[in-house]
Length: 494
Image (cartoon, rainbow, N blue to C red; front, side, top):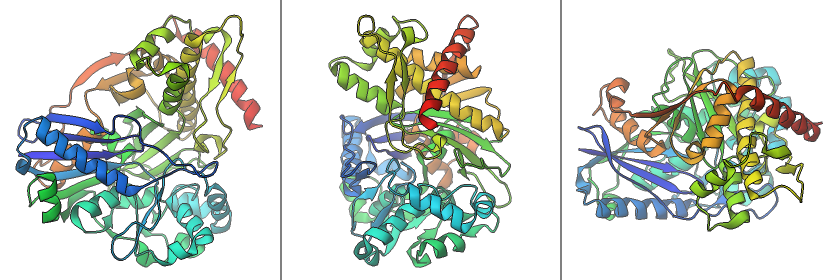
């Protein structure tokens, strides 16, 4: 028996097929091979066509089955991970009304800030654990204020993963975890927040039916099963936002455990059993995948929009003929501190850790007679690690200690510069695993469908492949460079 997991990102669609009996991934891949386009019709806007996600999901599924000679009819469970905080709206015929406003779109910042004040800061932080900020509910309010014709056509609103589940099954539903990331969920009352809906003018009928994260949420349409070449009885049995799911894929489920990712955006995600909040909502708490009313499991989410996207941008600027491995090798030629160059990696929209300010990315301290591409590479990767540290300091203030960071060996964690700098500046060990979001979604679906009876069984084959420890000889110098970086950041925040 097989399980398939999807990771619906803004850069690409990933998928993995898991042999349930062996606990091993037998096929994985991504599509398209070049990063998906993010449309920005105005500064701060970021949109994608949900139907493009679905087209790529179908292509990738068929490709993996054919390329790896897999009997697709053995695929009986489906898990979905997806880019968080996006907004998809469909009409009664399940047709998309307008492009999705995705996670890095910052058009709703002012709406969220106003809601924070008018609903009440104390209420928002104690009940929602967050400011409404630039999250899904605020994005829907932007639709109300600017595209009322579109709003009037809405049958249901969805997160990106809900949309893919709809295309697979014809059913529209969501999860508590998903509603919490959209800032629709009241943790004190354990229900959808009427205060948020009433203030923003959102009809509760637009919210989909709620299903448990690990459960048989809906059955695949026979026509879709035939098109994809998978079992007609296959069920969607798990879905979660990419960051809760990435933590799940690393078996991060309990109080004090921490996961990190560094793809297009960068995230540190720690699990806690206590409701807490940052009074400025610079880091956020959402319901984790195993959260229940009786057993609180909340994910403390630190997000940095500009991480891997900066690395990708720099690669294009200095010569896209270079592989990322070659870029890492060039950066390693340069000493810690990049001979005085500082890069602030905040060029991908408003940053929560900067109080939703959009300060842009900045390259500081260039000497035209001395600095090279290699200096820029090192400074960029150091800057990303320093942004993580800046956010982790906020998490520390909330009582979350970061002693060990678990991550998949992918994206920025393939860079020796980035991961060693991060280990040095946080004084934390970094454990790298052979897994990713699609792997985690496939495992989650086996739990939801009942094929694995426990999380322990689901992760019995999780493979730790490398540990990075802080370098005693580099900690002091790295700390000095971080303090310079932090002081330069303050100039743009004042």
